[in-house]
Length: 118
Image 1: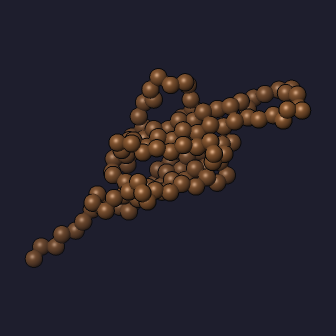
Image 2: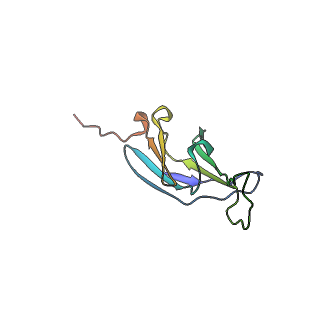
């Protein structure tokens, strides 16, 4: 279904862990994005390349003093080449417990068909 693509000359980012499951109807992609809020996620589909950008922001209240920081802002980028055309208008995404789930239905024209001989 997918092939990872190389990232261009952008600022360094982390490639998130992900899994892809599918059948003839479509695919489900699960991406681990710990600490990311839904407002920090951007999903684009262009020329059969699915790109997910996500940013984890670490905020400290202004009246607090930082004593130690190991959780900094972090950018996630995942690019996948889709091997089957998907129905972009029917795609959906949810974020729950740090996992982004995308449903990617395959276009009707790309689904396998059985032709009966008469």
